[in-house]
Amino acid sequence: MLTMPLTAARARLAEVVDHARVNHEPVYLTRRNRPVAAVVAADRLVELLAAEAELAGAGAGERNAALTPSEASRLREFEELAARAARHIKPGTAPLTDPAALYSERAARL
Image (tube, rainbow, N blue to C red; front, side, top):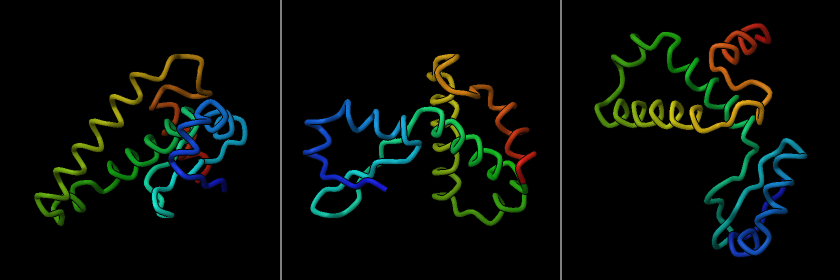
């Protein structure tokens, strides 16, 4: 796991992105020694968003009934972000860009 200050990452952004992409691990960015963000490879982001969407969909009725209005709003915002991110990934840049394919592959691994 690589951690670096935000100012250093800004100066070496290309290297940070390459590290995340090549090593398939996030690079955590810090401000005042506290993590504030992470750089992850696009294909990994697609996998994470698909897994989150799958978890959000499984038993959503039961879980959504227990959510506060604020939590339900944040869940909707996340689902919209996941859908937008999936649309912006260029075909061929990630091993799997089709969310349905990601769901089936993820389910096969479980």
